[in-house]
Length: 334
Image (cartoon, rainbow, N blue to C red; front, side):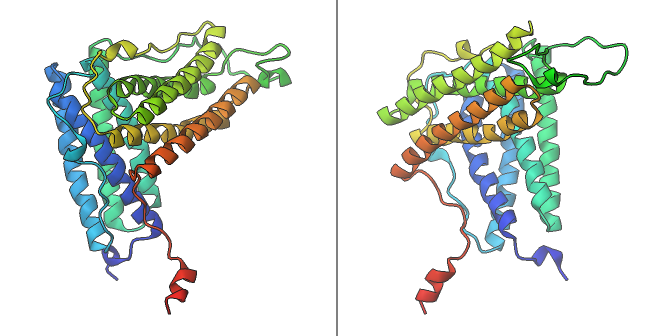
């Protein structure tokens, strides 16, 4: 049996479809950032990112076309307006690429884990290696420039310890306790992700053409800001540092380099992807206040995505992924 001629499963085609649409959206932003970046070291990393995705994009198209599925439209040069005023600083661009690379790592390993065909597994393994290389490049440059924000430092205990009281789970009532290192993983990461979402909301809100889109972005900014403050308050209660904001890395430009469709899709992607990380935070939380905070955050993001979906559909901006056959409708055509 030629294993590479096996039909694509629903999960495999869904993964390819999502990788293409999400990848082209980020690629458009990367192309704009490459055009405005002045720092040569940062520009070189973006050049690598553009070349890497171009190869991945071609391979995804080949997989889909060979399987008889239409390649999604995604995002392209019609969503990019080069030559506009600089909207973001070089510092923000580097931080953006770093965080989006983390998204790519998660996406590639998820796609790898649901792929059966060897050619697909080899492809996603290659994509994962590319993303790890990009992660190393971005983090090294952030460290070299003194821009990388490390998570809070802990000091070692002399011996391993065991939980000895039910108060361990209580962060509101009773004696309570300080944060565990396992909990700070999600707290710190989710704050950084929300900082990126808030900063993009500010920048995108300045340049969006539609009043409806600008309102959505303003609301998204407020939601992300509230989530940052809720998690920051928990860190500060234990005298732990909070990641630095990036709002000052947005210029005062009102000249849009992107279509409103791209602005909307990108923000929707960030809020939907964040649900994975908030869910992981909820699963690892052992304090009641953390559980309540992550639950509230997940509900807030659901409201954001509900409004996002309505705007996207009303403007005919949301491509439909491949659907399972409707057997009842097929039978009616007999």
